Image (tube, rainbow, N blue to C red; front, side):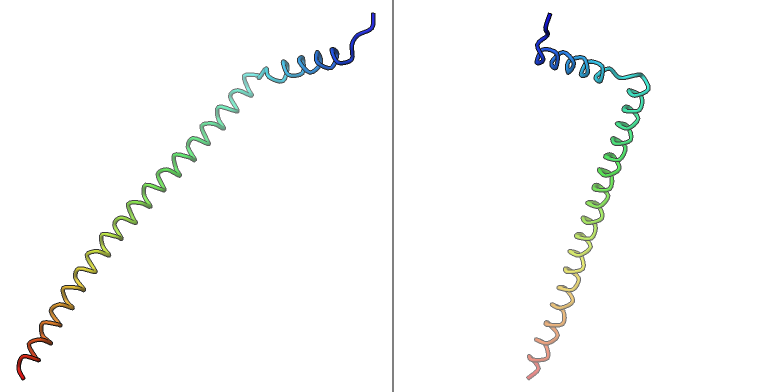
Length: 88
């Protein structure tokens, strides 16, 4: 009996796929460990972003307070300049 080469190729490919998809408990444990490590790294990245946002927000708030203080001081100086002019 002659076998069809295409049928043989399909059969061999199916068996190869079947055996390669079976993972040992060690392989599953290794993949789970890698998944946990990746999750921990992603959590670290998220925490870094949150911390960075807090620092940036604090700097913005500090910058706003600095601008307000400088503006107030400039207004005081301009008021003194007006008072000097009024002495004419």
